[in-house]
Image 1 (spheres, rainbow, N blue to C red):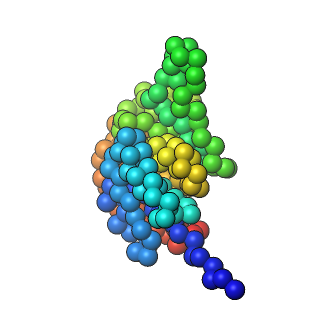
Image 2 (tube, one colour):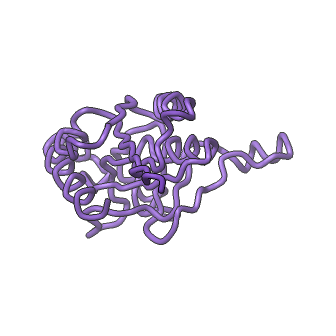
Length: 186
């Protein structure tokens, strides 16, 4: 009889602030902020087949694009909000940056900008529920490597003019909520 191998999970967060209350028994990869940092760090972590996890869980904060939206969410769809895929397709004939479907749940818009104004919030709210800066890159790197991924985001702010202050005030509470979610659902 062969011994069964324990499922390995890699937690991915952008910054230490988001990871302070995560379960201590799971490895955490801090990528830094933004899509490039997230894609590079996750790709590097998945490059060694001998150390590849069975599941990657990207945890972090997100801005709410709709009033009344709060709490912790398992993302169902993620898309880039700062890639002009329509123009790129017209120019090249190829579609870049397609949305990634992950299951049921809200849509996350990822981009390399900290959304903190009502006009951008309203524009993004037409196609998404939440906004962050790393989710799409983590999901894309995992898809390319053939590793299952989940995105779990806790609402930290309203993605409007008060977002900078709100994020600083709520990031530790968000980390605690994400830690609780992981202990419940993993």
